[in-house]
Amino acid sequence: EDPDCGIDTCECDRWVEIWNLVFTELYQDEEGNQSPLESKNVDTGMGLERITMVCQGVASTFETDLLKPILDKVSEMSGVLYSKTPHPNPLQQGAREGNEKTDVSLRIITDHARCVSFLISDGVIPGNEGRSYVLRMILRRALRHGKILGMDLPFLYKLVDVVVEHYGEAYPDLVKNKQKI
Image (cartoon, rainbow, N blue to C red):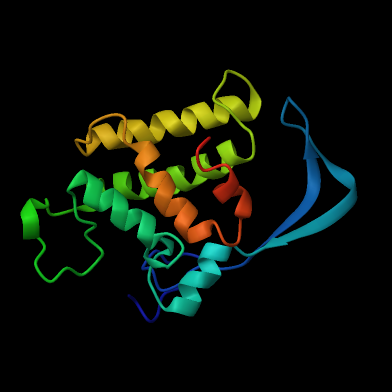
């Protein structure tokens, strides 16, 4: 961390974006030509995970109580430790030490398991068009990262319980649709 860094150019992890503003003022056509919009606007947003991270004083959204239980289950199932989580004995019970590459796979599976659970609960099924295609690609990406970690297929369905357990009270449709998911 460089205390003299500039906010616009720094990549030292001193700054974390928790809220953003998007100023929408131009229309861009298919050829790339831009023209002013008749009605300009400002979109503002703050992610639940980002504010949770700040409130809980952790360095990553994956270390919050929103995602850590899922991440811990993925780590347990894969036998690969998340390198950012302190472990009293990192090699305990034959678990492999994690690194940045395995951490990426653990985070992708964690995020995608939650996403897939919500999409299927909302009635989306894998397919070739629109949101069905997006779901299919999310599933495939999660499974590919499971293979990278050496996980046997199928495995993703085993994460539904932890997603429903931690989100079911706020999102009762997850509980109602658990079997379908």
